[in-house]
Image (cartoon, rainbow, N blue to C red; front, side, top):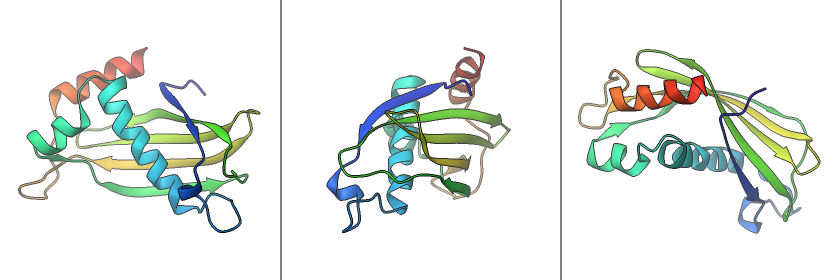
Length: 139
């Protein structure tokens, strides 16, 4: 799989259950952070600018998840993001959490829809965001 965006991450105490294993909903928090970093740093569009200033929402409307191995507090992992599909009003991402040993810990497919935060209706993906995603996909 070609990876279009990735970032290192250290599993924190706050990510874990009392057994020191990542509590599964925390993966969604990690991957949402990866989306924010990708839009801001990877695409140079600015997540805060889209949401706060331009009032573009990006809610998740579908998640498909496979948890394949555990992650423990202190583990160094890589969070990866790849665009699988770019539609008119939505895009599909694949996220992967990979351990330092190369072992897959979790894989998530996520569908995000762009919406107006004024009307809460779906909108066409903003042109600058679409162009940045297309450039990213071509790289």
